[in-house]
Image 1: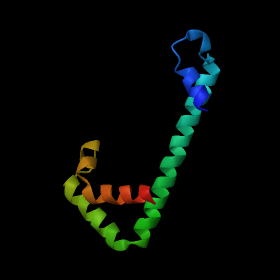
Image 2 (image 1 turned 60 degrees about the horizontal axis):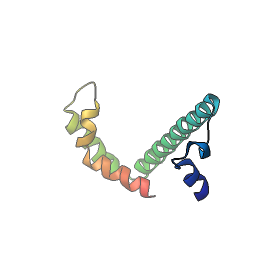
Image 3 (image 1 turned 180 degrees about the vertical axis):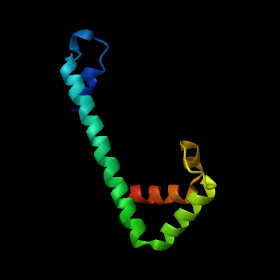
Image 4 (image 1 turned 120 degrees about the horizontal axis):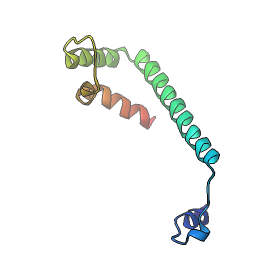
Length: 95
């Protein structure tokens, strides 16, 4: 594998691998689908662990309500303010 990486990073164009448009599209689809699966697994674990630990579920809910200030529509601006939720997700990733 290291030889392949060296070959791909070579400055000599004759050694570089040429990918077809179809191969590039296939690789992009693989990354997209793997990312979706990873996200769904992460969210499934998060829901399970919050269900098993209602005290953390209550803390996360209270934080979300206080940070959102009861807005009907939430935006990405609120995510950076969710400290307890961030800690819970970082811990989840460690598991």
